[in-house]
Image (cartoon, rainbow, N blue to C red; front, top):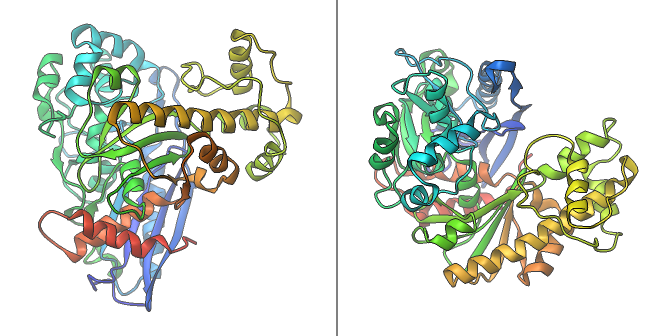
Length: 481
């Protein structure tokens, strides 16, 4: 194994926060190739605190991450050059004067944002907000959570930091907001790519409480003292990659600039294309598309819909004993004919957690179709309906994108867990008329490592997209074990 101090072959750690599981991975080198190992994985999920709301167990997350980092340090005695963190967007931690968490952070699924969104739009109408930020209007966005804080008496002036950057801060970095992650807040001016003074001023929110913005791949200094005392972590740099997991996942696609599209297929399905600049037309707003920062510059223009979340909620409802594995459901679903009716995946009744089979059948009744049979035995029928509905919606979304942008991709790159679902990918190719390229399940980890590696190799200045792409090409063939 090479030394962690070699900028051409650095040893790196990637932390990937997920709403259902979190991972700590290690990149090492064995001549001449890199090796990537998932060192520690642990389940995650929000906890219902009753009147206090739906919260993340921040202490447990941090304790598990320390366990993972110590395990990485044991495996890399020559030294770890960098640690980067990616995760889901919109949620944040409020800090006290000493930089410590004021309490457990809210989960984006907490119902407090519904009333907040209505109040915000009474002051700043939704389409005006979209014209400023380009971000899809969703109650989960940070802007509505900050307003909900105000409604509950939390001071606007209390500093806040989004969750991936909070982990970097907790590890020793200054409080920052990495650009790709910050675009998800609904508070970034799409033109200036800075915090929108107009949005903060119009809503009376304290812009001084927002973190300093930094670019993807920014080095944030060393680890805190109690971790730096470990020999492997003595010279480790904290690096903000593309802190949003989708931005890192798209950065982890081994493609050069050109006519390609992407589907980030996991709990949610994000269907889109890379653009040079944001598209904030009335049509883009009305169709629910969003403009988010990309790791190498430019914009990720996509539409989010409920993805494998639908099937997971079904499995949680009618298969308490876990009789069906996902692989079994895929195999059985392939043997079934096309359903008589596709799900409306834009139905707002579908995303919340709960009895998904009942919601699916309620929608079918509403459209004049008989409900699917109840119970665990009917599981393949629900899976088939979900897979085919997803592929069908992917096709219509790419049609909408082409109508709005005149961008016609040559092929589709699928990242995330859905890249392993050969049946869904075949249905997608059929629905879109485009070849489907299956990319890494852990593409966000690859993007995280690529951005760190580019920064370690080039300690100062702006990272070039070509440099990031070169790193991804090297890592893309590596199987994560």
